[in-house]
Image (cartoon, rainbow, N blue to C red; front, side):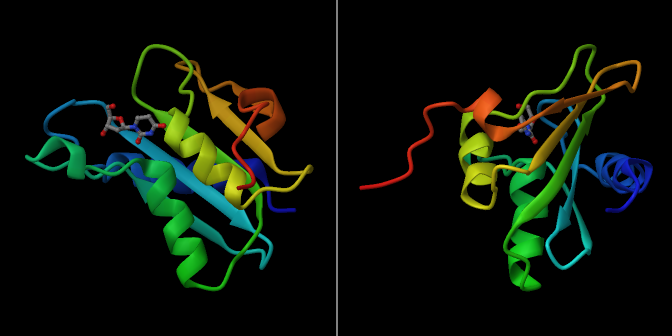
Length: 129
Ligand code: THU
């Protein structure tokens, strides 16, 4: 398992690159995948607001494009005043590529890490039809 600080560094760098001129709220995410690679993502807004994408979506898409399928760890950071928690849609995105061991690491303004599993944050995820 890679060091959480490595994940933090990539999430933080991604956050610095966020394109968030409308909300002015920057978010960065870093995913450690089953292939041991780390993928970063940032929110990428659009003047047509619903076209904007979340940081988690970007990092997960990069993982999938490179062949990764399981999120071992995902760390999320923002420049907000409180702990960043993924939106509902991103929880469902994380769920798609999670297993019971997947760690979701959320950071607060003091850059403390808070560890969760997807079952903590999305206990009744949609999973079959
Ligand atoms: N945002 C994320 O990138 N991830 C989340 O889980 C929550 C929200 C972004 C979307 C938008 O660019 C900005 O934060 C404000 O909602």
